[in-house]
Length: 401
Figure 1 (cartoon, helix red, strand yellow):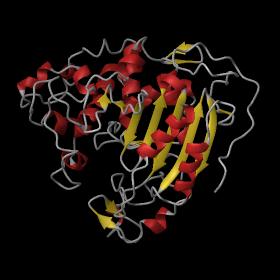
Figure 2: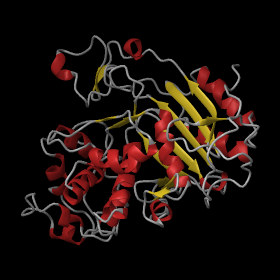
Figure 3: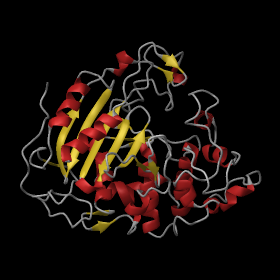
Figure 4: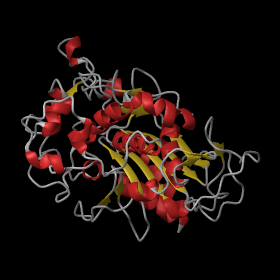
């Protein structure tokens, strides 16, 4: 079994500003990772390596399928950083189905498009770059951009009426109940819009598949019927998440990725990304962002530091607490909670903030322990593997308890 690859701790760097979340076990303050992360070891950061060592062995043996990356950070230090090579050109060869077509399986170039999830030119890495598809972890990042727009005064608050950002759209046929929806309802997946995503297969009966085939994603979502009054019912709704793109565009005058570059990605030092767009040119905030693992982890670190980065506040005071709060409880049989596009899969009495995405994309934050974990995978093919989320989460928890 390969040892966890770690590097000696860097003994220089700027002091971190005090944070209510970072572990009290921090001995040496890490430099802010705007340009790069400081390196340390599990032991130096007070973590027991046993459980993560076992997880690594299972990842290497492909027990959990096609996992591409494992990254663990504590107290601002990278303590585990592993890459796994998967030949998706070979893996996808001859594959064809509702999610797309793989190597040598597409009829012509028209089938090789951004929503072909099986083709190795586009998924999981984008055109040979290191940026990896995040799928619905995108929602958590997009919500963070919206939070930055609130901090900068472009949006008044999450109590703003949802439809006030869509005056340029045809609202004549919408269900009148939607006029009562706020951004808070939208962000917590309680807009009341009827949406069939988690309860349908990946075929034309799935509302999100219909969305991705439509010419105008925002109008498509607004035109859907209502099945509840806003705030009354939680339903996982990727179309609702895409509306964040329209909200930020209307409020700021620029597209969400442009706003992120100035007010989020720029300050965090995220300069390499890819973000898919809808047919009308709006950033795909339901699942279109690609980031490298260390860059995604910066989002988790910003949240660990209460929305402050290297002395500069990027998110409203109180945003992290609100965004990661359990606004809705019991959203699945495991009793998870849900916040502003962030999941709360609390486990073994440990609070967990999570961005989760299709195919095995995970950003996990254990705020009480100053721990961030990232896994990238691409388990979208017919083969079935055990899920890696719970083993990963338990590995992180067991390493600090």
